[in-house]
Amino acid sequence: MMTTHTSVQRDELSTPPRLTDLPAPPPDKVGWPWTEPAPVPSTIMPDGISWPRISVVTPSFEQGQFLEETMRSVLLQGYPNLEYWVVDGGSRDGSLDIIKKYSPWLTGWISEPDRGQAHALNKGFAMCTGQLLGWINSDDLLLPGALPALALAYRQNPHALLMGPVQNFDTQHGFSWLVTPKNVTQPAILRPWHHNFVWHQPGFYFPRSVFAQVGSFDESFRYIFDQDWLYRALTVAPVQYLTQPLAKFRYHPASKTVAEASHWAKEDEIFIRRYLNIAQSDWPLVQAALEVRRAEISLRAYSLNRKQGVIHLMNALRTNRKIITLRLFWLLTAKAITPHRIMVYLRPFYLRQKFRQVAPSRPVSKMNP
Image (cartoon, rainbow, N blue to C red; front, side, top):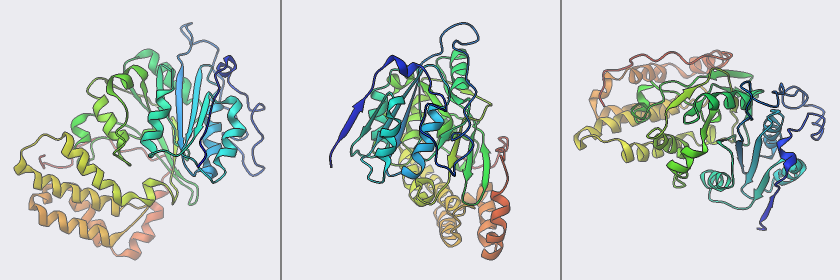
């Protein structure tokens, strides 16, 4: 396959494009970021200094149906010091035409075969020069005012990992809900079955100095390379939470979150074995908890697989009977034994909660680890 690589480095990139500068949207597209721009921030920060340079990378592969919306949501932020790279994996679905159409407003772009999303991001961040880094996947989008909000938070704490709320949405069914980060710590990340931490990648940005210190993403992971990197970053940097929603995360049948959900638990186990330092005698309980985690994925309202959920719950019980002390085990058991027709009936009511806030952290189990 032919490799295409172009890089644009011009002073004009520091001047954000206006709505009228960009290509006209399709006639059926309205609202943000098609026909409505974001509020334009002042040319300098409130304290009189220049806005920090923010580098945004969009990794993409065969996402032409969503890519233009993603790119417009970044370019129309009106942010006066933006560096924006698009790293495509050699798509043949029309993505390249979209990238070329918007290339005058990009810092640069690449379209060539790669080894996956983590590799694409490593390539992108290697070219970035911004003080603050982040990425927005080619099926997601930034919300208006996201970059100025991140810059203000970075100004307050230039050494912190920044996390803000993210709106999950499913345009096919009209569902949306808000995911608010909380309790992002190394111990909590290593025990996802306790459900006492929340984070969401589209609302995550970090100083370039932290990325240089922690190193690149582990390309052996397909799904949780970001979680693995976050765990390592928490060793050297604190977390600062933002209250302003920063991005929208799209649920659609072809996304890894939906189409490949059953594969995530395998990488969860590799990740936990890598970092969780407990006695070998305690591993059966961890194995049981991971089976509960797999059951939870199978029984999610979006991609309900009741039969597979029951299998994982039974595996958990056979692995270690102490798993019955985990509150999540009983919640999922109740969900699993509920007749399928009732679950299907209740699913729209569960998903139709608009901007549902994640519940505050509270003890869910006496189980240890």
